[in-house]
Image 1: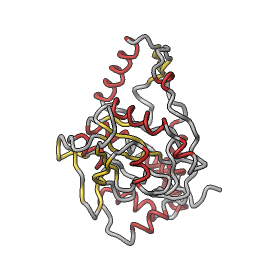
Image 2 (image 1 turned 120 degrees about the vertical axis):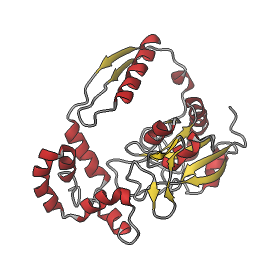
Image 3 (image 1 turned 60 degrees about the horizontal axis):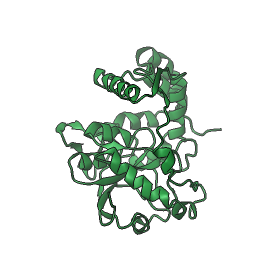
Image 4 (image 1 turned 180 degrees about the vertical axis):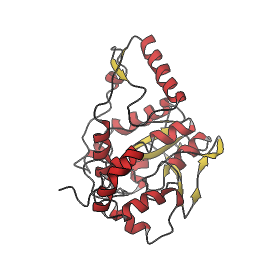
Length: 295
């Protein structure tokens, strides 16, 4: 696949350039033409895709269902065949979930594999857990071709952003036929997957085994504590930065539970978390997570 003159789309708040200028990014990948920006949820901290300004983006296969979030508009456009390639951002699934919901393919690279200089974020100054740009396309091959181009000339980004490592695309590693040892699980004890998702894991396991790889079961340890630290790292100030922004605007109904939680003083959350944990364990853990600072 040649990338010359191909059109691509990007999620509304995505600035995939070390300077915040899309033209620099277009020049890097040999003539990609940005033609639209796509919808995102209010606050960017949601697995839906709705906001008071542009409304709700639905699933291209069933308008009664969500396209996922937060890069939901991007997933919907690609799933509907409206774009060859898109750029989303991902902290806790914002590329992967919309791709899953819309039948697309997406990759969340490791932290800082793309330069963030000039970019934006829903919660600024959160060094403990960070979003990263990632490609979204109808198939894995298109994502690979995109990454092969942009990481083949990674110096363009690393020279302008000291946090972006100059790690180039490694074709020999990508093409290696070395057999791997891969772990899998179908229930992490926190979010129990639907039967369809569990079946997909077993199908992937079977394909890996047929290719000669070793696949072993494992169970992620201490998930409640991990999720508690994750929530705390995403909202470093207990959600106050996002809350103050949202209170000056119309509030999207799909995030009202988040907004109400952010409005409750932290000490009250802690007090209510213990009885809440008996009824809704995940909500109880969340109410024990938020804090005013990270000291």
